[in-house]
Length: 116
Image (cartoon, rainbow, N blue to C red; front, side, top):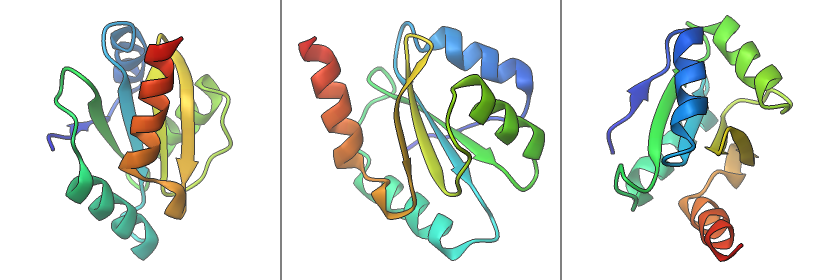
């Protein structure tokens, strides 16, 4: 799994635009939280997507609090940590946090989006 670091507000705009070509996953990760470490580990262990299917982005929300707030505002989600957002066509199509963060859930959302 090759995380792309999310470190600027400009990159947030790029992710939104990129999501029209390939769904983008944002992981909001707290480097001070054991649950966040577990969620990240589970994603990395079970990751089964090529970069052409899902592009993963990593946000250290301790270091980049303003970006974390911008993510919540831009995609109209309540801030949580850890949290994933799956962005497709500029919209958040999946918002999950804590133990609800699973590769299976991402796959289900991607599969149902293909069927539409």
